[in-house]
Length: 193
Image 1 (cartoon, rainbow, N blue to C red):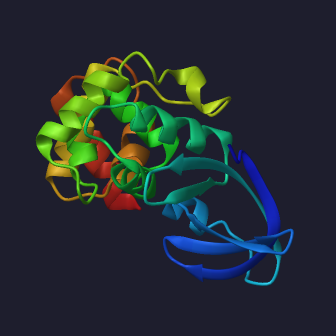
Image 2 (cartoon, one colour; image 1 turned 180 degrees about the horizontal axis):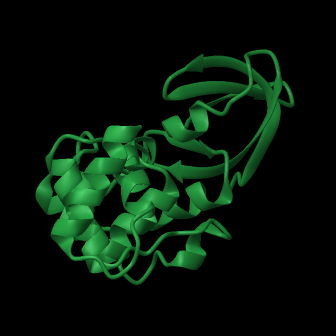
């Protein structure tokens, strides 16, 4: 198994890249989260990898962090989820966002990823529930939101705010608010920014 690859980055054609190591050019598929953090072509790069051997092909997948590779491997263990869907999930959200969506059982966040339908999203949440914990991302703080914050978040998303805007607004809410007061305060803070 090829677990790590270091070499010269030759080509970048999302989601595929070519890395030359030891005189061999390796075609590697990477999630967009890794792709955006790659150096320029012609520079050295080091990636953690996962090799899938099939009868007709050897497929190499690369990741910028150990958390991404671990999430990819957990996704592959789910029935009906192949490498293409696993890459789509990691391209559509960070590992921390995936862990948070699983912890809060929010299928709506997964459905926004291209190629993920409602049934697949619910199966992912069910299968990953006990496998992706706060410790999974290795030191990245995951904000476990209270039920009120989760309801406020859903309301803001339904009103058309982005995930980032909604999370920022909910993050600054004081504890002990009702859902309606939380929505009101979140809307006020969003109006100021």
